Length: 143
Image (cartoon, rainbow, N blue to C red):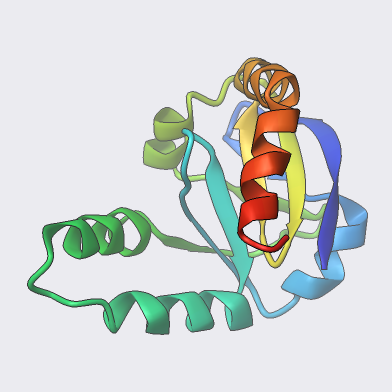
């Protein structure tokens, strides 16, 4: 599983080091794609396959289903760890997420996300200030 928050820098070629504790789960490669909230999602092959199967089973006749499937699948790219444990983030994904040099990798159990450091700080501050409201709404869902 992927958990934790890690600060890493992009190098001048657009590579980022994956946290050492995440690397063993990515030995068969990984998929990186556009995420929500202007971050990038990274899945191991098994988790990606499960998600992709759910996405392609969504109704083709619903505009929201088509849009979300396009967002996730058309924006996806295969990535592999290099010898230093880095992945290369394609230009179009770096642009989508607004990645500059300082980045944050956040582990979210079945995936990890890559954020521009400033965007993550703003998102986290906003979410933390609303934590009581969020917890109450999740409580309504039985969580």
